[in-house]
Image 1 (spheres, rainbow, N blue to C red):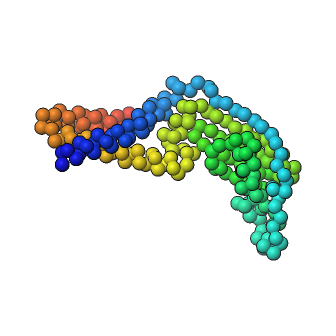
Image 2: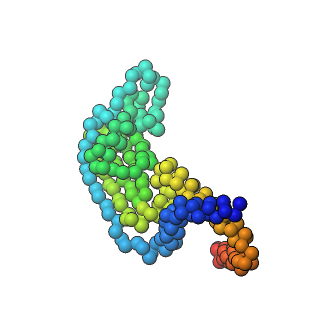
Image 3: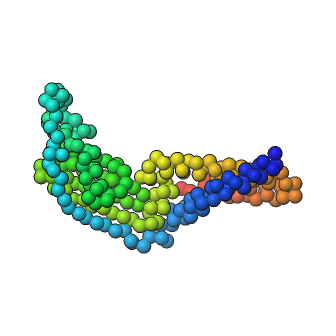
Length: 211
């Protein structure tokens, strides 16, 4: 049993080594943003035109009858709507916009498309009558990318799984490390004292100093 626990601890720790270091370092960058912020945010603004027909796709009158105003689909009146997929693909292909679409809203005058990714955002305001648009992209820098990845913000479902798996790996490494300590008669007492002291110090810090 001891051999298996030691094997598990070693290889699980190695598997999660990079994740442990990454989340430890980004914990510091999150806690002290003023230490690392260099004012290197980059903003880029571009203009262009989209075919108004894409912004006002005509619906079949039979399907539109009685539907009313469907804001979620970007319907004007009850006879036209926005081809959202085409709009998003045009913006991506023309300007290399990254990130997931976090919002796509439309009224009778304009469309607003918002993209968000780690350390990055892009906002497009599109006139439905003329097809003219303004796209503003903002890049916050490498530290912001790392911080957003730490929080799992705007990073997609795949990265969310990585965060969850990393948490499990760190938990297993901690528990197996404690099990190895308990199996060592010579170091058991001193190790448990340190573990208890660390736990008590953390709890006291929360109770006494967190408002």
